[in-house]
Image (cartoon, rainbow, N blue to C red):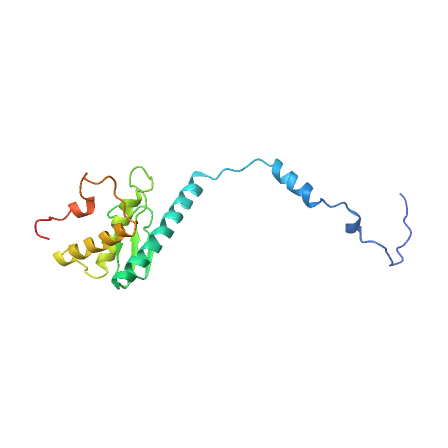
Length: 170
């Protein structure tokens, strides 16, 4: 065993300072050699949901402002809720299901905007009366004017949500 002389307490360099450090360029090169990690299906799904939800929140806030509605928040519906596409609460909060029940695909943007407009109309009328249907159509027409609601080629059929109501009475 080799004996070392006792340290005098004075050193010119700290041992960590004597180690070679990677330059910035070398660090970038080593990062570039790493394999690219692809997002998982769950991560992609969450990203899609968040992007769509941000759009709907923005559009909902604007439409609520135009019509003077007590709009508080818009969130996605909880997983596993399949009984409805959207729900509205008296406090101004709205929940919308973003994905198809069977295929788990993101619903079409026009369907989501249609549901948003339907739930916004419920902020004023909590029923499906004639007044509600007229008000819902006004919101939907405004969404179409603003370019938020684009249901498809003109001349096909009425939007699904509107066809649920008997138009003869409205």
